[in-house]
Structure formats: C-alpha cells, structure tokens
Length: 166
Image (tube, rainbow, N blue to C red; front, top):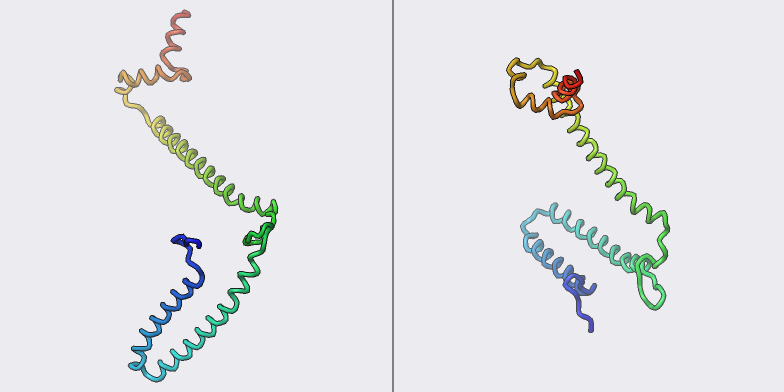
C-alpha cells in the first residue's frame, strides 16, 4: 500500500473534506434562516439552487477534462500533455522572458552608470567654473593635486622639465 505524502491527498479524501465543510456552512446558515424575512429567504433559496446546478455541472465536466489531458505514454506510464516532443519555437518562447529580463537589468545598470558619470561631470564643471580664491593657490594640497594630474598642461612636472631644458 502506498503512503501519501503530506501535500497529496487522494481525490476521495479531498472530496469528503469539501463536502464536510459545505455541510457545516449549510448547517450554520440554516440555523439563522428562520429569523430572516420571506423575501431574503426566497433569494437565498434561489441562490442555493443556482450554486447546486453549477456544482453538478462542474462535477460532470471534471472527469472529462482529466481524461482528455492525460494520455498513456509508452511502457504504461501516464503523462500530462501526452509526452509529445516540445517544439523548438515553444522552448525559445519560454526563454524569451528571461532574455528580456536580463536585457532590462543591463539597461538599468548602464543608465545608472551613465547618470553617475553625468552628475560627477556636472559637479566638476560647476567647481571648475567658479573663480578660485587667492589662498587656494598657496594651499599645499592644491599644488599636490596639480602635480598628480599628468594630462594637465600646467602641471609642475612640465614646468620642471621646461626649466631643465633652458
């Protein structure tokens, strides 16, 4: 005899639980039904009849749907969807959302990187466009900054090399 795993209950047990729940709800509603007016009782009776008709139709259609979607695949095994080979276009369509997500993430990363560069450039432009106070030129930190920038034509290294040539 097979043991049921906690997540899988046989169909009959599931139906029994649903039925018990329905009976408890119906009993609770029936206890209070005498206190209601005749109009409300009639509307509730009509709603119950409609619900029973829908439930009967759903029970009749459920076995037909299960039988049509489950097919026997070689060796007496049962598989949903018939076990047919999946077409390549369907596999590609399954990968497409992942590719779109990856492309979106790369685009977001690039735009954030570009925004950081643009804001740093704006800050540098704003700082360099303002006039420096005379005390900044005598600051040793400012001289060191100028010496560290090798591409700057006004750096102290170029001045030293110009002086050595003369």
